[in-house]
Image 1 (spheres, rainbow, N blue to C red):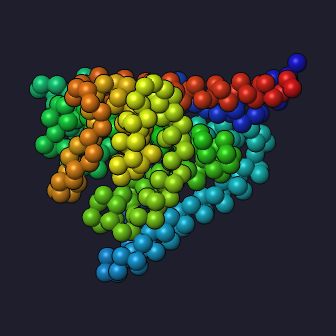
Image 2: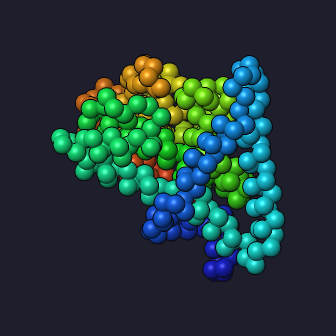
Length: 310
């Protein structure tokens, strides 16, 4: 018989416990880590070199990333060594690092608002989540943008930190979450950070590739889905494009297409061959991806239990 305290201290149990608590416990918006993005953006504006060459700005962006991450990693390591229970400490820190409830709230708000007279409210609700202009978005455009956002943000602030914890413990989860926050704060889609934000954006894409592909893997089953996945490689973030392409095919909707960033019109690949997204599409997309994520978590727990019995 496996001692309960031993099982609870395994990484798999900590992963499942943190994900379950985060899904059930309400968490005030001002206490979520995503509330740090405006502060990090102001930090970026202070340390970037607008008069420097692109190479100088990229070096400044890399330095800013290290300045944020190294003290946080050192503080976490120091406090963890003082904790009475390291598994409990890891559980609480991981609970702080992951965020899926805000995505469910965004998807639910889109279901209620992206129609008729409430469309302006839907645009306002989605605007803080999007780097693109929302003033010209129709109800279909808002639903499409929110669907793409909840799928990619689920990788950034839920699947990614959980995967980082599995690979490198709580320090790996912290590195992941801070990288995703800095990518949002120093987004290269904004003119001010076009060069400054490139180092952390490239680091984020490297870290996000495997978790995005793990979420996409169960969607790959079926005839013709390999061709669909290859079409997603044309996306600026290829692994994210594969995930969105397969998700669009499963939901029978179209994602991607043109959008406005800082007033400039950019043409992204069109993914999928179905209908335009509806107000309910973001919630459906998020539910499907979280179901896949929970499947991987439960598989990890089962493998841990199997290893204990061997």
